Length: 550
Image 1 (cartoon, rainbow, N blue to C red):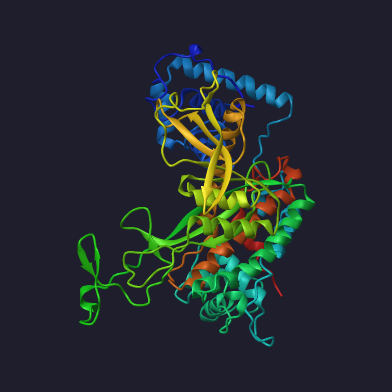
Image 2 (cartoon, helix red, strand yellow):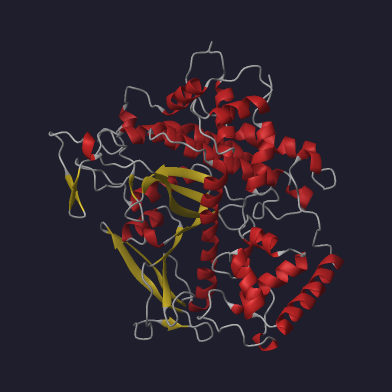
């Protein structure tokens, strides 16, 4: 309701800098404060809401969630007393109208079982929802251990699920996590940390013998590729069962819109030896003009990240976005060449990553559109998506300063957007046509953001079509949720452990999304877009359900 309001700037004073000179647009700031006072939030709670799971800041047109300090500064120094009074009185009117139409609630769902009695969510409803989601997410994993083993596989994956959401490690040195798990579990015995870690490695370890199916491109697959395939097989069986629950509860309407992106998982172990560890036979590599000596057996999947001093693993995912329940449909590890490597490295191209992710996702859903960020601006990527008979929307890496002199440009007078249609995009002897769209940039004054698509977009539809791209930010929020709430603390560099733990983190994220969907009617939310259970609170209640007794 608030996000759809028009904010007449003439109503307010001129103490707030004009657009382009401030971090946040004036109208967005007013909407933010209307929301705060209509809901009766203090500044701390407003900040939590803006950075939480409802993507409130995106709805208000904010480029990012302001810090609590920024909220306080804007309120006191950028808005006059008269402005603040206008906002407060308008917020009261909004609240009264919303209350008259029964579209606002004073009670936020809470997840401590002892505190739920006064809300519409019952203990039984939460437990049933979480257990149903858990059973669809974890029981597909198989360690291939002996049938007479002391502990069944589900015990280990229940425990790993708990360790992921409790942000704990899994070795015997993680004494606190082991004791906490034993305390919360009703089981008479729980696995030792060493046994647990061996089981996780065994789960991700591929068979010793390769088969003809492994030689997908005619070459022997690398170990990381076989680990990937071993882990993703049960992951996809779990995705299929989770989507059954999503479909049964009306949380998805196909064909879907999906987003593809890549996220890093940093490591802090240096790839170079200390001086005292260097042997005479070691061969150096030159990094920034300096000779360095790489460590033997350093994981080949670790590579340099955005900053020169950073390194880590990277994972690509494809996720349902838009108005449907956001479920991760596929995961693909990213292989990049590194400065410290002395052998020939096989990079995974962006097109190869997109191809594998689309194949994974198409096992489960029909896809109508795919959104990627500027890192995927390549003819090979566009060709890959087009060959899957799917619409893409990908921004160009650079902004365009002027567009008036572009031949065959169609210009929309009101919005200033422009389009060149029937543009050929070629790769590897294949050509498809599409549109190049120009919309006024929100980041650089006087510049235009440039988007490419394989659709023939009329000029009057450019602004609306490109406007859908904001939905891609949900995959960024997905990564934040997974890293903050669903990845364990882990020091192991073993790729079997790293990839398996990341995939289990994705499973837990999907479980969270399904759980919210399963009792959405109880809290009156629309599909899976606004989770009634924030991830941070979800992990506590899930801990009670993920370690059942005998």
